[in-house]
Image (cartoon, rainbow over all chains, first blue to last red; front, side, top):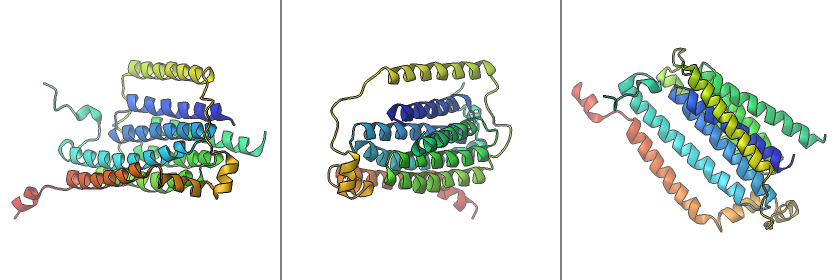
Length: 99
Length: 179
C-alpha cells in the first residue's frame, strides 16, 4: 500500500474517464467523466502529499473539490440553456458552426 | 496482508469497477449512481491515506451536492433515453481504447521508473498527531499560508453562482410577450 499503488489507481481512473470523454456522445456523461478525471488527480495529489510529508497535497485537493463543484454547476447551467434550443443532449446535434 | 492493505485492494477494485460502469452504461441515471459509488470508494481511499477532512468533504460536496445536481438535471432534461449512446463508429472506439491503454502503459512505466524528491516536509504522521490531528493541522495551514487562495475561491464561487443563475434563467421577453 505504498505510494505507487495509489498512483496506479489514480492512473486507471484517469484513463477510464479520458476514454469516456472521447467515446460518449451524451453531454451529461462527458461531464461525469470529467469529474472522474478530477477525482483521479485528487488521489495522486494526496498520495504524493503523504509521501513527501507535506500538507500541500490535501490543500490542493480542498481547492480542486471546490472549483470542480463550481465548474460542474456552470457547465450544467450551460447545458440547460443549450437544451432550450436544441431539445437534445447529444453532441451530434451541436452543429451551429457547420456550413 | 494486513487489514489496511485488504481495505485498499477492496475499495480500489470497487472504484475501478464502478468507474467502468460510469463510462459504459447505456442509461445516464446508471452512470450517475455509479459515479456516486466511485466517490464513496475514493473517500475510503482518502481515509486510508490519512486525509480525513478531505474524505469528509468529498462525500459532502461531491457525492452530496454535485451528483444531486447532476441527477436533477437528468430529471429536468428527461435525458434518460436510450438513443443517445456510445458513438456507433467502432473504429473510433477501438482507437480511443488503444490510445488510452498506450498512454496508461507510458505513465505506469514513468511512475515505476521515476523517483520523487528526497526533500521531505515536516508533516510526518507523528507530527500531525502531535498537532492535534489531520483536520486541525490542515485548517491551521489553510488559514495562515493559503489564505489568499481561500479568499479567491470564495470570489470564484460567487461568480459561479451569478453566472449559473443568469445562464439558466428564462429571458424576461419570453414571459412578457405572453401578456
